[in-house]
Length: 87
Image (cartoon, rainbow, N blue to C red):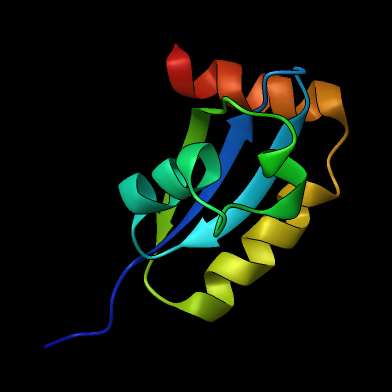
C-alpha cells in the first residue's frame, strides 16, 4: 500500500476570512472544521466554513511547501487562485 495523498485546501469562514491547511482526508477535515472540537481554533470561532479550493500532492513535504506559499499570499491572490479553479 502506497503512502496517502495529501491535500492542500482553502476554506472560507462565515466571516469571509480564508483558512489554509493540509490533510490526507479532505471530506473528514472539512467536517471537523464545521462540527468537531478537532477543527482548528481559528475556524471553530468562524463556523460554518466552506471548501473553496484544493490541490493534491503525493507527499507531505510538497503539500507543506504549497500550504506555506498559499498562506503567504494576499487575500486578493487567494481569491484569484479560487476563481481560476472555478472557471
